[in-house]
Every structure is written in structure tokens, then in C-alpha cells.
Length: 289
Image (tube, rainbow, N blue to C red; front, side, top):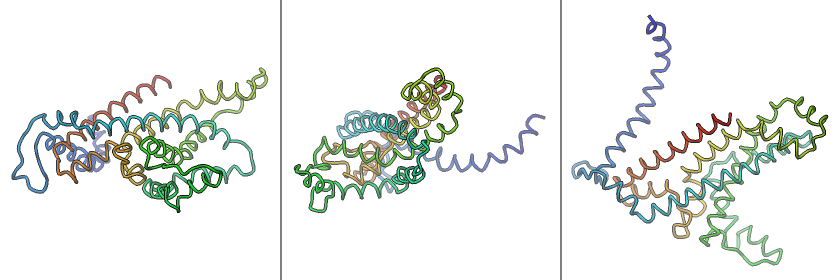
């Protein structure tokens, strides 16, 4: 009886389930199977089962280890910096200034172009050549040109900066939407009790932003862990391997080096790592909520 009642609803779910199985589950299972082989691509004639050897090789691959470290650094700094900047920015955008709509549009605009477009744009701005706008500004104020993208240490800083610049407005809008749902009665009651601006911000605004904070940080963490397009467009992963991310190495091992087994093994390990991080964040978010 219960199954008959649920049958119409299952009919609505079935198309999505079929698409999910064909586009997500089937490729994932196929990748898992190929990660246990020495497949070189194109033909399956020379495919041999190698067990867990590809997974062992992943941890001995220096480039993969460096890319994992770069990805972790990127995934720690980008969400942290954006969160610290987006909350006060959203509070400023929530003010009653006459130009608030223009300001909101101006801060949101960098999130509209694709990451590839932003990466190529900033690669010209930060270029050490004569057309590099940023170095021209530095020279105008009496400074020496900086190798923003050619110095290994500065390259990662530059990638993080551009990423923060491009995503800050979008996440400020997430916090802004939450801010606008906070009752003004809370602020009025606190002002009557003698609270100043800083106390209002840290005692009322920030605690009320926790749901938005959980959502924003989760989105930032997931996108940062799987980032590929922005660093690739900006630096190509260089100089050396200083800005190479794990997603780039996975693609390189497969399509460039024809080491599909190791590429699949890296992808499976990466998938499990991101899934674990996501579950931990969800649990932490539920506890805070």
C-alpha cells in the first residue's frame, strides 16, 4: 500500500536517477576499474591488471605531492581571506548609502566572467613586460618592477589574490542576503542597553551570519580543492610547479603523459579526500547551527 502511494513520486525521481547514474556513477566506477590497470589509452588490448600499484605510485610522485601541498595552501588561504573580508564588506553594502546599488554591482561584477577570462586578464595586468599595467603603477610611484608571476613565492600569492578578488563580491552577497533577514529589533534592543558599533557587529551581526558562513565556507573549500582554470590561465602551473594544483596534474598524467591508470588513481584519492572534507564541514555546520 505504501509503495503504491510512493510510486508516482518515484516516477519523478527516476529520470534524474538515470542521468546521475550515467553521468556520475558509471564514469566513477569505470575510473575505479581503470585505476587498477596500466591502461595507456585508446585501445584496451594491452590493458593489464596491476592491483594497487598506481595508488602506491601516486604517493611516490613528486609532482603530485607538490600539487597536493599547493592545493591545500590555496584551499586554506582563499576561504579564510574571503570570509574575513566578505563579512565587513556585506555590512558596508547593507548600509543606507545612496550609491549602495552601484557598489553592490561593482563588487559583484568580478564573479561574472569565467575564471579563464579572469586568469588571462590578470596575466596581462601582472606581466613583467612593457604592457604590464601593475608594474607600470609600481614604477610610477618609484618602485622596481615585480615578477608577480615569474617568482615562485609571488606566483602563489598572486593566484590567491586574484582568486579572492574574483570571488569576494559573490560571497559578500551571500552574507548580505542573510544580513537583510536579521530583525532590526535586535539592534534596537542592544542600542538601548548601550552597545556600540563594534559590539553590535561582533555580538549580533556575526552570530546571526553563521548559517551563511557555513554555506560560504563550504562552497569556497570545495571550489578551492578542485580549482584548475584560474591558476592554469594565470601561470600555467608555474614557475616550476609552484602553482600547480592537483586537478592539473590529474589531467596532465592522463592526457599528456598517457598514464591513465595513475591519473585515475589520483582522481579517486582526490575524490575521497574532498568527500571527507565535505562531510566534516557539514557535520561542523550542523553543530554550529
